[in-house]
Length: 264
Image 1 (cartoon, rainbow, N blue to C red):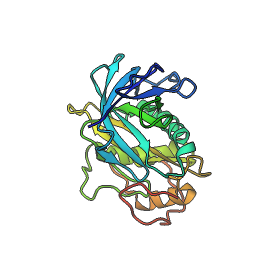
Image 2: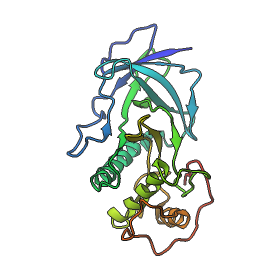
Image 3: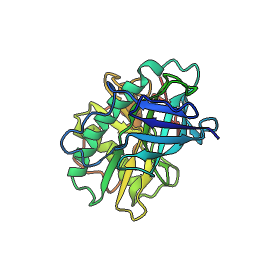
């Protein structure tokens, strides 16, 4: 197993692989009402298993480690980096951060509605880069806190798990997606919701969200107006959805059902 260290310092230890947070691209200070943002809040982390990632998406690998400096010291974290040959790498991280920012706005508003008494949190990744002599020199990565009990609540094509709890957090997440369309005047839908629920049920944390937008502002996972229509064609309101929340007039299916993330 190989390891690497993430941190602000540009000093590299030759025997380690290092990740360094970029000074110009680091996570900016949270806006007001950011109490539901879950931040790295640390300056360094050791990542193990770079040669054997524990998870992967269509374009990225995921490895786990732990923070070594800062308030989250000894807590678990993950880092995500692109597979060889992926064409989206140059802009994808910026679009990821942009989607997280929009998702946080929506989640802040949703929490303020007090649909339930618990809180929905959102992981905020930071863009870091591997340091010299790391074997991944200069390659950018997203680093964020690890989520226990990971599960998928819905996809960006509107698919939900076949047997989901219609009275608990999975149902609430479908309502959050519906609410996002209503709150933004039909411009956006927050979806592809995934993350974990606190063991005591007192909250849930999401990561890597997708935003569907009318004008396809958020990159290859943003399926545009057709994606919004498709999402609502498959959406079934539950007890957490409110009757006055808006829906699109066009609820046609334009994309095949996909439990994973659909790309354009």
